[in-house]
Image 1 (cartoon, rainbow, N blue to C red):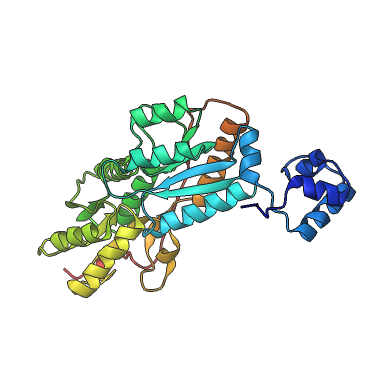
Image 2 (image 1 turned 45 degrees about the horizontal axis):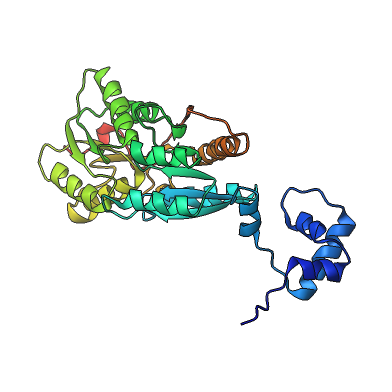
Length: 340
């Protein structure tokens, strides 16, 4: 069957220019005169021409596509990251190919296989552990990798995170400043660098005041697990007067359990704080005290690092740590208000 697709040659003939001139007009970053651009685009519109940008990119050795792996989107934080990263790359004529990681052991391997088949120019891995074998395959394929909101212990890949150690310290200092002594912690996924650093900083600041954690639960960054951890921690009569939760998403689940399942008031009976400062944290129903994670700055730095690795062919193992800040809202209160 004959194809009805309009070709660049037909556009060139209609505009009275060469095919190379048409290519220059539709190739991002190429210098063309305003009159040539107007003549070619007018002819293209008349004929209904749509350039095959992917084919053109491949002919130049690049797809101008960035692979982004995220663990899930039900946590609003990753929806925010996805939006910001996509817009930042679009502003420099790149497009983002998103893979949400299924909850299976072999999922990451299949995802990386797909991304390499799509011939992405770079790979941003957000809060997902990438095995050394898979990383080596990406390197062999000439695909630079950047870790976002995660570091890996060997320091082989560049990464961008917020200052999780500092954030944990700030959380502990805030609760201590309110007079709390019985302080609990609900952890995220134990193997995550973000979880480890937040807890380490939190414990460190408590220890400077001669305190240890009163109680500890594990929420795995999953709502249902955080709910179960909260029920277990606060069902006992000697429950903590304050709890730091490793991210906002779990903190919302903890507040819901306290208020609606256990009849415990927040903050009158228990102070709750999280980490991240996602948009929902400011909603009046939660008004969550939290550690503000500077996502916009993290995204901006990650994009600039990735572009440098792609376009300048540089190798980078830099670990960038962006400072964070404490945001005090009404989910925490002085110990004097606590019902004992």
